[in-house]
Structures are given as C-alpha cells and as structure tokens.
Length: 394
Figure 1 (spheres, helix red, strand yellow):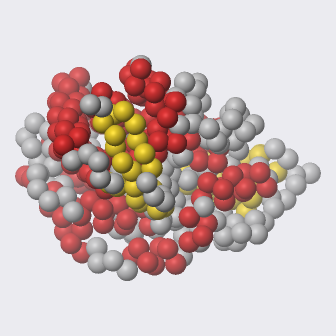
Figure 2 (cartoon, rainbow, N blue to C red; figure 1 turned 45 degrees about the vertical axis):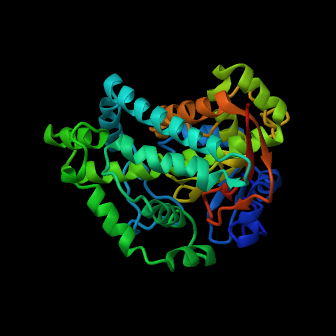
Figure 3 (tube, one colour; figure 1 turned 90 degrees about the vertical axis):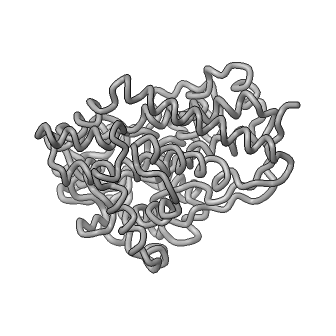
C-alpha cells in the first residue's frame, strides 16, 4: 500500500523563503521525495524523480500547471502546450534558426559584448552592479535586437520580466506586490514591438510571420511566439551569467581555469545554471497516477518539478554546493529535459560566448564588494543586484 505524501509544514514562497530559496528548497528535498503544500500542490525535488518527470510529458503534462491562470497578462505558447501542438510550433522556431540567422545573431551579440566591455574597462575601478550594468544590460540590449525588434528605449523589459514571473507562482503577498505596478505601458509596448510592421525585415521575428504566411502557424501565434521567446530568452540568461560572475569572484581558481582555457566558457555557463538555477521549478499536472518511491502522485494533481533542488541533490552530484567549471554536466536539469527542453539554448550559449569571451580576454579578477540582493519573486531566482569591482589586466 502506498504511503501518503506528507504535508509540508512551511510556506516556501514567503519573503523570507525567497531570500533563502536554495536552503529552503534543499530542506524540502531532504524532507521527503515528494511533499504536499498547503494548497495541495505536490513538490518533487530529488534529481532522479525530477529528471524522469521532465522526460515524461504524457504523465506530467504542461497543459495545467500549478497556479496557472490562462487569462493572465503573460504571453503563452509552448510553455502550456504538449505534443502535437508543441511540436508544430517548436518546429517553426527550429526552421527559423537557420545557419544564416544564427550568424546574424552572433554578430549582434559579439558587437554588443565588445562595446560593453570596452565601456566597463574605460570606467574601471569603481563599484558597479554586475546585474544592471553588465549582464542584464547586455541581454536587454542585444537580445531584442537579435529578434529584429525596433530599436529604442527598452525600459519596459524589466516590467515585462516582473509581470511574467509574478504570474508563475501563487497569488500571495509577493504576487500582489508585483501586480500593484501599472503594467499598462508595458502591455502597450509589447503590443507595438510585436507587430509585424515594427520588425526588421530580415530579423528572426519576421521569419515567424513568414511561417504564418506559409500556413505553419497563424499570425496571432507568430506574434505570441515572438513575445514568448522575448520573455524566455532574457531573464534566465542574464541571471545565469550574473551567477557565473559571482562564482568567478567566489572561486577565483575556477575563473583562472576559464581564462587559461576559454573553451571552458560554455561549461562555466552550464555549471552556473546547475549551481544556482534561475528557476526554482517547472509546473506540471499529473495525468495518471505517478509512483514516487513508495508514494503515489494522484492523477489530476498539480506538481512542481524542482530544477534547483535537483541540481544540488547530493544523491546525484558530488560536492553539489561547490562551483566547478570542469564538472560533467550532461545530466544537469538547468535547460530542462525532453520535449520541453529550453528552445533558446543555442541563443543563450551564443550570448554567453560573446559576453564571457570578451570579459575573459580582458579581466584579471572580479571582486565582490557588497551583499547580493535577491530578486523578490516566487519561482524565478537569482540576484537583483550584485555589487562588484572588475579588475582588468594592464
């Protein structure tokens, strides 16, 4: 007879819990292979079960996630679909990311990285925020450009980010604080920049509308897909890069390995994604009864598959709390698994190659000069501010 999934005694989405998300999530993982939150959501945190759940989209469907509101403000496509609808739309993205398109995007990333690093080097010596002045600045500048969005003020990107991530968690105090912001200007901006007539004629975004012309998707889906990619391709990337910069400061011997062998840049990015994941969980719904050790998650249960806790599970990882650029990461869950694995992985790598490549060529070391301020949202995770000094080579 199956054992009852235990109730978890703590709220993992309070202000204090978010400030200490890694410790909170790791404690949940160690409490039991599966736990039930007060609202009935079941959280699963061990690598074995999270990896299996991510692979099994038929048993753990994306179509009805915990706390999901289909009328929310965030753009939705891909994230809330399963095959065959998911496959049809994902294929359009794959077709659009042709070698020619990727070369054009790479040029945008490289030029943006070299410009930013030159500016940082010219103004070295003073404390800066590695999030707002380096990684987020870089991604918010170059990624919309690479999609062919119109140039100009990107101030609404931050509001867009806060809006999207707030809707992924429960409607608690953090949610209400985020949604108290006036998102009217953000939504107007999104509506304008996602229009076909606003896009660069040869950019990635226009390729989605050309796919609509060919009947592969609808025009509405093309716009929605463009905005979904804009959301999915920015925050997790800049947070992962910020965490890598923090790790390079905390583990200077690992940074030295990257400087000596720039081929480790991608592994360094991947290890950052494992070491401190920018997303605490992926939401699913169980479509059948799913065994988790000696317990069963009943069909119809909404489930959180906890990326971050699984990526620090000592049952799977050796010395998981330590950042190691040479670690074997083929079973890291940072990009997801299976059909819902991150569609923007190639673009995230290209951005990391560009920014980290430029930094590694010029930096001697990174110095932490203050407390890291966490991003106060429930499911997203990472630094809101990361005070550092960048010490460049002479």
